[in-house]
Picture 1: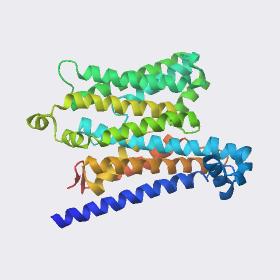
Picture 2: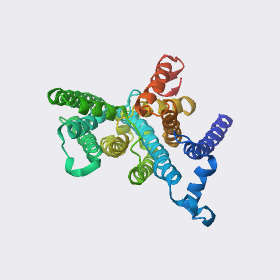
Picture 3: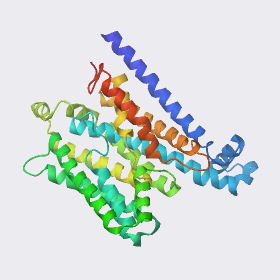
Length: 354
């Protein structure tokens, strides 16, 4: 038993180091892909000059090559890293909060709330005074208001439980979806409806250093917070009755975790629209290998989710020549079959290996 534990610990450490190195490689490799045909020398010369201001590379401090690499590709890769990490960790946390393996960052109606916010901004011009970021900001507000509404409803008539959170999320999601469709129907603006559809498909085409400067710090802070809470997340899998007998009331923690996760999801929706399946599939893939201990599940899930979304975005940029495939569409195409496989795999359960 002790020998097996040492082996599993060694394997975990090896996989953790591999994923860290793979993530670094993914960032460095992903910036070389795109519709613009740039050499490796050009790409890395721009990055080296911007980071270290090497005088011999001063020619790369401006111009078309500089703009493509520094203002378009690198922010996009880093934004994919931050959003993939955020969605994966939120998926892990949501599944623990509601004790449901089918939970993902959008299970509590948060995606529907974000979609409603974006729909109101696009179709009715609400938030136009916010300028070019009005759609993203309205989507963020919609996601946050939805999460608070779910918490409030789940706490009516007693403390929120995992079952009440799921039911409240389903109800709020149905209301938001219905109202979004109603607004689209009465507005009867085909161009705006197409814009809403594109938003709901998800994309990193609007990546910028400003968005990276918001999304990356928020993700890192929230992920570090959850890494310190692995014991409580492990306890949530046992249920409220067991936790109370052990002297821990999960009600307050569940609410705090949900708010923190909603902040990450809200910013992810603000930066890239709605992207599904990342927070659903990645946690299950990690559980198959390392079980449900959140001290391992959280860091591995964060690294794997970040690398996964980076390469999905690369594929979106190169699959269609002179065009771009919506990121949410490609992720769903990849994620849905993987999830179906997990469902039919008899040797796998929510608790890891059977």
